[in-house]
Image: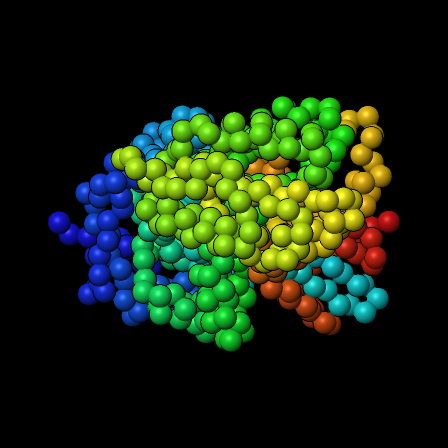
Length: 529
């Protein structure tokens, strides 16, 4: 059987002299799926970069309306192929077709693409700034090369390297995308790429606007992110892989935006437990077990004050964790969870529930709950914040409010942080002490809510301080803010008016685009009252 074709420079073709081949594996049956995929050599990856660089030049003359039309056509194509896409994604990931893939993740993906289209059309992301007195004007514009996107294994549609948030933001900003498929769902990525390329063809964009390789060697990946022709890289995955890519990109001076790891601490204050212990236990387990715990926003660390109520809370949570284990995305998930649990236990965490691989067909690891004292956590804060990408959570019992604050100060950077409090205000004093500390260590602060939902909203921040991401100033979700990662700030000093981009000319190019003119945000033309 010949390996599946790759997409380079507008052509689906067989890989030239692949380094190796691989297959996807059905996590439920632990059996390989029939299609075979190539591991591309470096020459092939470089050819894609060169084609992407040419496409980047061509896209500079493409109107935002055409890019918006492409993104909308892409979304339409995904909906037309929805059943086929979701069935294959289910076989490759074990995620259920309903409701997860068909009714939740696919609509989120198409909504994200359509929001990206509107952001491209509206152009406010450019942040056009005009100083009429000095005749200096600036705006964000596309990069000078393709954006390489590495997608994760846990969201085969909404974070896919072709259709996910990084790709949507890069494309909406006017950049071509070179997608590196996740090896956990290569067939799904091919179907998504077919939908994207169909939209490229139907809207007349440059053929290399979207390209896709299934896999490269590790060395080729490092060369990709640091190549002179690359514009930037978006990566979602493990901290170890992300940091290797970041080191290579940083050494070459190339932008790279990483989403890596988080334990997403949840502080449950005493009044909340006294008021609604069982409800909070339900919400915690539901959040931990969603997607078999394979969400980057899963709450892996819970902090409570030691008391009768908190001990009862641990027992209530433990009862829920004793439910059957779900299917993980792959064999590697079992191995990495086991390593993380072992590290937690080696540094003082005590096992409450679970802690072992499930000896049944399908990749499974027992739902695992651990506990530790506040003193143990403060003695080993880094080790006890080890991320376990599954249904695993550590409950830490702080001795008093001062120790709880000390724990908050020791937190690493996280995507989210939650604080549960009494609804009538009994916890307000402690909240005022803890929340400011958590606020500085997370991208998104929540009250009385678990963190696993990430809404595609202009106000969303799906980012945070290191090691949650590589740069705390940017978000991977939320348009148009996520587009700024894939833009360059262009300044025009005393440039003649007809030579300026439309966004910086005196007339507002859309009539409703917001621009910063002489110290005020406005939709007016330059010179109008």
